[in-house]
Image (cartoon, rainbow, N blue to C red; front, side, top):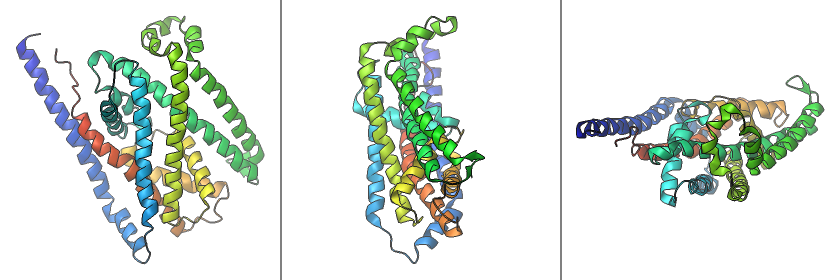
Length: 338
């Protein structure tokens, strides 16, 4: 490659870095700005005559570090399959993935964002590893979500979404068992590779999946699941804390179960996290609380409390990490310079 072409690619990379990082931060700032008149004034009004429980909010921020620390730990374990990765690089890569994910449905941007900080020749493998990383969290969300639906249906009366509550309960419990079977296949992925690796259209991808086709992956996948459970518990308990602070008025176990059901439902929705600002979560949680009889009446006060709590969680778990990750995205070389 000529020195002139190299120089052009360096300039293009520099421009793209500036656009990606500054654009991400500016857009998040814009979204927060357009909500200032609505949500921020509601927050001021809500707490004007109330004392704020500071300790639970501090604990929510501590759990944010537990949440993303666990994700960084998982990503570092997986990345070591390709190359030795420091905790620092794993942290940058993870937060860059957060920044990329908030602007895409189903958070698919995290696949590019996490792999983007690796050398070009390893980015394809990096995205495959992120697929397995995401699958671990997917399994945890599905298992607990279906288990909680089974639990809620067991104590509910009548019909839920047109389905008898007891039938829905049975579906939930049966589904959680099927997820456990899928977990077995996830842990023993070599069975799947042996079965489907013979198909013509899968052979071209086999070189990527060879990364996890060894005995080390079985042990690692078990670790991925348990660390994903830790993340799940941290995020769910954040909801318990903010619901208490904002006075939603339900028991802690009810919040825990409702949040778990929320995570399950969100798996099916192409939500753009940068746009919804917790609004989608508010709507779904309100539906869960009323449908399963966790609240007798969804008053305007309860709706406001759920809205403020969801927005606070959005800021802590997504907006703050995304802003930090946008800075790391600026280090990405989109074009290969040599």
